[in-house]
Image 1 (cartoon, rainbow, N blue to C red):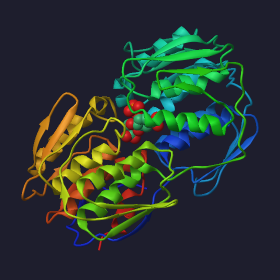
Image 2 (tube, protein in one colour; image 1 turned 90 degrees about the vertical axis):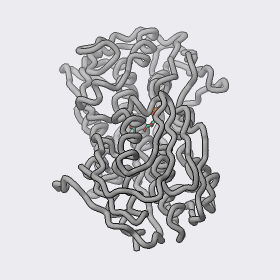
Image 3 (cartoon, rainbow, N blue to C red; image 1 turned 90 degrees about the horizontal axis):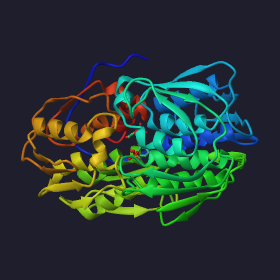
Length: 429
Ligand SMILES: O=C(O)C1=C[C@@H](OP(=O)(O)O)[C@@H](O)[C@H](O)C1
Ligand SMILES: C=C(OP(=O)(O)O)C(=O)O
């Protein structure tokens, strides 16, 4: 379906209601990959249907993995390969701008019997992958850069990897460690994976370890400094794998409830969620909102909000939602230790600062932080979204002021949340 090039959201008087969020991107792509490698058939339910998952599924198809998808694409039964990937012909796999496809597939393919080139959208060619390639080369991998050193596209001559002592730089993206961890059981020998630098976005490693455990592989985690994984293992299908709702996608609705009063109940996530972005609700609470936690939902009720000054390295995606929530708080809000916003779908630090300033807010853009001073009145402007789904979703919150907002290229939410604006409207009165 073609999307309009712009979408104008008129001021919303009231926010109230219940929203079910689609499946988690991080869990969907991890579970699909491990289901493909596992022994046995896995039925994934509540799978996310979005561009990032389509890229993973298309890659699995090219790699000869058999799976069936329900009509609405949320239930997928995967026949596992019971080992690594194998392909007779050289392959080229296009992975869009999906970090959760590019990084984990790079590692799993380097450890497989394949000859494969990994490509992506132009932005993917600007997103670093050198720290992952360096780590895999220590395990014996053969990976070459086809354009710029340290960036996709990559040419991988896959082979059985030996494993051993592997150092991974964790200071740019946790996805590099995730990728090595998920491939390590397939290596011939045992591995000890040690972290160089500060590990960023740490809670995503919990998602990785939890998903691996559900597919039968245990990892010894020494305080996120080093991880021991036995080689020569097979993943084993858990039979069924239910994907939790996406906690990052939940952030926009929870923020809307906090900003506007009324109550918003988000289902599909809950107090025991494995996703770190669930901690976004704690930030809303610190800003003054009332948050109630249940097993299968989170409810936020709005109260007057005040600005906060916090390290949000642990919730890099949901933290973007705080940058626009800050427009509705009393006093400034600082979001700190978020350098890697600069190497995601766009330079998010610069994009958020630029668009917030267009609305009339005062913004300080630091190398690894952003500080936002709300303004009394906001201007009706066209928000540029830089092909970044989260920029589009974050700025939808502006319509909770007295001012409309126009979102350019709203279709870019297709990366993780194709019908975001339709669901957003269901809580607007
Ligand atoms: O492992 C994952 O599923 C993700 C890790 C995070 O990336 P970084 O580790 O690069 O911060 C996050 O931003 C991304 O959306 C998903
Ligand atoms: C950073 C993101 O995506 P990716 O998985 O491509 O890194 C994101 O979804 O905000």
